[in-house]
Length: 143
Length: 195
Image 1 (cartoon, rainbow over the protein chains, first blue to last red):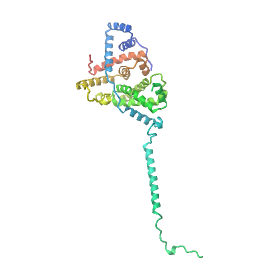
Image 2 (image 1 turned 135 degrees about the vertical axis):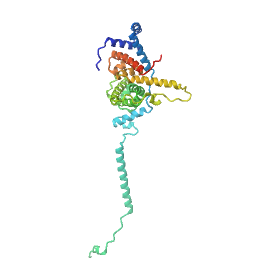
Image 3 (image 1 turned 90 degrees about the horizontal axis):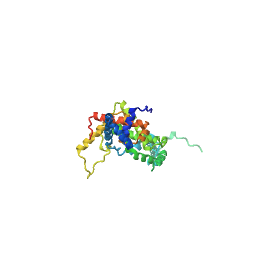
Image 4 (image 1 turned 120 degrees about the vertical axis):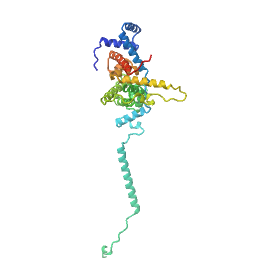
């Protein structure tokens, strides 16, 4: 960012900030206060700046919600797409998406059904024999 | 865990180091975002983004400042971007400071044996706080940034130089003008300054 060349007004404003923030030596502070006694405008500016400083200083710090840390962890996991954090560090390991989990569940269920169906057929044995009429039976071979 | 060790572990993508970073700095970053944005929900969202962005960019952290100062820099930039976005959407502040639940204000609930403050004092305090925040919200984000960094977060000029990229003299002169602007905005909102 380009910073413009400081003017006399900038220098004065900076000096007043230093006085208010206690950044001047005692000698410099006394010298500036003596000048302020003769410059009502600057004295008013300093008083206004002090009031603003005191107002902001009176604000109580705001604490984040109690679950803030957990929410940040969750956001980082979601946004990183599993690139961060070694799976061994995570109790859940690499998380499966809902879609992948659903496909796996359907495949497992289908496999179970096919297995049970095959078992059921095996237990039922061969189906009923169809009686073949005598005329349709192959003729026995002559000895 | 000292800072160097913390940074080493962050660069190794250690989740526990990330958690330690968030635990250590969440209060300062959330408070900064709250004062910049004047809204609890926006502040929480931007504060969360600050940590996520910091973790993703940790390899670019050269260590020429404290990691806390670096986090402030990220948070300030995100806050200014959010203010621009909200401004474009015609949304300055979306939630009155007085509507923020107690928990979000950092006040623990009273317990038996606590000396409870008088309700009128609590109300006066809230009204004053609301007015100060409204005065902050009325300022240019560049002024707001300096006031929050110095008078709310109590950062040094050197840290402010690092965060804002301004020269130290510019930080001081703008800070003076920002304080005067806040005083005028507070007065315009009907605030009477206590003696």
